[in-house]
Image 1 (tube, one colour):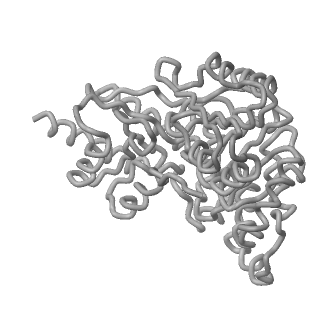
Image 2: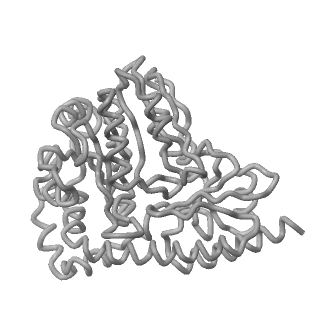
Image 3: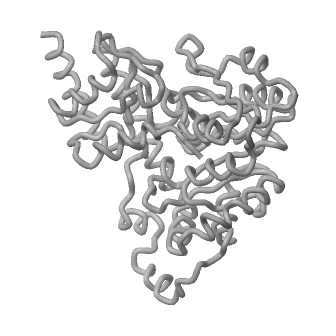
Length: 374
């Protein structure tokens, strides 16, 4: 199998541990173990839970406790419809591996997480792209999708809320996507790793797993729940998909770590406190970003309705990589260049980190933009 380099991950690996102001981070500001134990009320009792644990492989498909906590995030899922994976990245990869064969027709949106077009392409699938455009608020053009989704289409891959744009397909919009998928018999994979960060309502838009009999939702503890260090994700979907994925999963996963499973369960059992904290960070920081963009004549964007990221368009005659490398070297601020997202002319900002980091980092970007014009 030959596959393209994963542009975003290579960029992050090269720079995220050396920058001073990380405005490329896509998680809501990560929790410490101490913060999680305080929120869960387990600071004084956690060792009583951990010390008796025998560190075996644990429950192969994920503990009943964890999967039961996860189904509370959905409307129609049961324990057997949930499979635990190594992050959402593992869930996405397993779905593509289990469902896509050479010659299959796959439709993906762009921009999105690169897995959803590069992996099926590497398997020899016939991949078609629906380009997300500013004039459509970075939502898929349903007419274009409908024209592409011919009979026999194997898989449609979407991302909601969208990374990197922060665009949000509400339930009514998703129902139209479901109708298109159903019309051609396609599976509908939705990367829902930012689900729970919507600006309005309770933060959770509908999952395709609840809307469609062939819908598959993937998610994790990383973004919305601020626990990327657990490396724990899952997929929610029909039993036929779970069974197909398990065949592949046996070769590369066996099980996730028992401690990861345990701490994820603790987090989901105190999720109201985590989500209240994280929605406050997201909403406060979105407003800060919005005010900054309004003052910068060289920068424009479509305000994100969810998620932790946004695409910033800059009015400068330079590549996005040159812009980002120059910003890092001059000011220590890290963005993600649009080129690694196949979106040249833009940069991605991750705005849900520490508010002081965001405020200081944006001020540094303003300095850099001023210097570029001098």
